[in-house]
Amino acid sequence: MRVRRRSIAFAGVGALLSLAAAGGAAQAASSSLTVTTLGRHGAKVATTVTVVALPSGHTYTVQSGKRLSLPAGHYIAMTDIWEHGTEGLGTDTFGALDLNVSGNRSVTLDARKGKAVRVSLDTPADVTGPPKISAQLCAGTVGDMPSAYSVMGWNNEGSLYAVPNSSKQLQFGYLAQWTGDDSYVAAKNTTGIPAAPGGSYKRAGLATMHIAVRSGTQMAQENDTSLQPAPKTDDCTTSLRTDVRDDNAPYSSTVHVTAGTWQPSDDVIAGNGEDVAGSFPPARTLKAGQSFTQSFGRAAWSPLHYLPVTWQKSVTFNPDSLIGDPDVGVFGADPTKETVVLTKGSATVRKQTLTNWGTSDAEFSAGIRSAGWYDLTVDAHRYRPGITFPAGMLSSRVTLDWHFKADPAKSMVAPVFLTRFLLTGLNSRNQAAPSSTTTVDVNAGRGSQGPDLRFTKVTVKAVKVWSSADGGKTWKAATVRHSGSAWQATVHNPASGAVALRSEVTDAAGDRSVETVYRAYAIG
Image 1 (tube, one colour):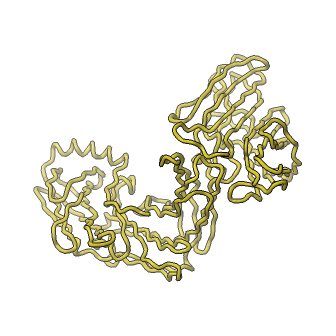
Image 2 (spheres, one colour):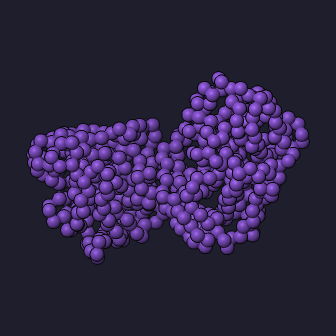
Image 3 (cartoon, helix red, strand yellow):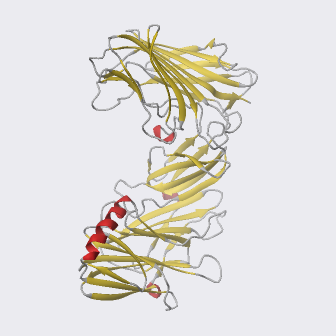
């Protein structure tokens, strides 16, 4: 259930810096501004007013009716006048003034001038209540839009108002959501506040986003999924969010949205109420009538990006994104604890235990003195102190074993690979049927590790795949078919338990990449 909260003024990093700068300017202030706010019945209402200097973006906040010292200049003053109601959520009225301040100036924002934000949809029969509307008012010509210079609030249609204002220094954005068997969402941004704020929408002009959340792979079962507009150029709809569903996985939901670019996300909530993971897959641009499915938690999770590199006479490795959601990418990886070992022949060059939990500085680095064949092994486990992982969590451990040539005199990305296993035929709990076969698409990939490192093209010579039904004690070779640049393995499943997957990728020069995902998927 959505809890009523007061509308707030957002202050991002840019705004905090601006506040510091504004404090210095205020010491030399030669003028002042006092903003009185009136409610919908004409009585004074206490609000927090955001005041933005143009064009600098220096931002101030002040209580209504209080005098704010300012340098003379051009300003936007804006607020959401929220009033208690005898029932429901009360009322919100957005208002702003574009004004020049010189001397001691007093102005009034009057909610009685507000016009209801009206939105309509050729609504299906399962939608019975009014839409909920989230709205945002922004100083639209200032950078770092909109979080640094905006006021935001939400209410049901019929209880949310905006005072019309034709100033081109303002933007007004809203997001309306109708809820039934599916959700229907419309987002719109305008320059200024229109005389009749809102809009009319038809279902035939909407696009569709399916959200599919599977269970078994994540650090907790509760998933809070959402969508928010992601326009190419930030505007006053940016950061307005529509909640899709907050529930235990597995589940699926469908949201019909206005055409445009949308950012899906998934917050994973542990049993103690802690937000333990946030997944942000690429934003999706959808046209009217187009449909797309965004999955979260699909098996199998594996390393997503980082490869060993030779740099400054050392072999280094960033132990990040080692266990991550392939449908999300590096922004969907969980924290891990890993042991990393570099050897040359039978000699250990360095062994180190690391974690990226609570730090972004974890890095393995081992100096090397001579060119030759080296082995870098990584044994990574999910690691999140303070929470209890779900029983039987999948993709709980990943190992890597890379064999490659390195030369201390040459800086380059090692000619090795990461494997992604994409499985078909599993149910919503990432389970295969007992004693069945599972098709596994095997993708051997590698990515540039930065502009300062030589990145060579490496051609795969062979891919092999094995499966294990006893936690890695014994392994059974899978049949692998090769077509063009793709490989597909057929795995014969046991009658119960879980299946581990292992791949080996080699090139013509003898470089070898072995990757293992333990408990890649379950049998059920």
